Image 1 (tube, rainbow, N blue to C red):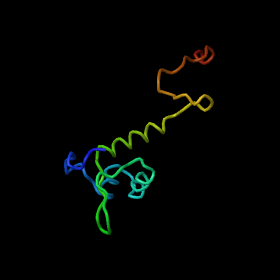
Image 2 (image 1 turned 120 degrees about the vertical axis):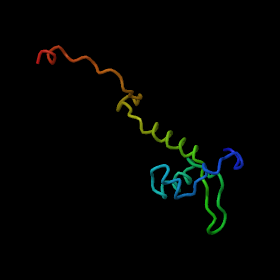
Image 3 (image 1 turned 180 degrees about the vertical axis):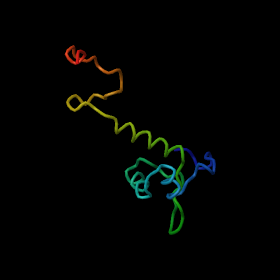
Length: 95
């Protein structure tokens, strides 16, 4: 994780801003933090002190989660990637 002074102020988001930016609920941001997916750039200590998150790290978490949702073959668990459609059987071409 980068140090706080290496961030641009516009890249630091509180919980509500981070949720809006990511397009998720605030509780999801807190869940990502608890699960270790998202580390705060600046942890708010004490009541009323906001926890700040780094915008690029939010992008990384969303990318990781998107990749985790990739479609896999039911039996082999191989990643199914979009490609050309297989050829139609001869009987289907005549119809």
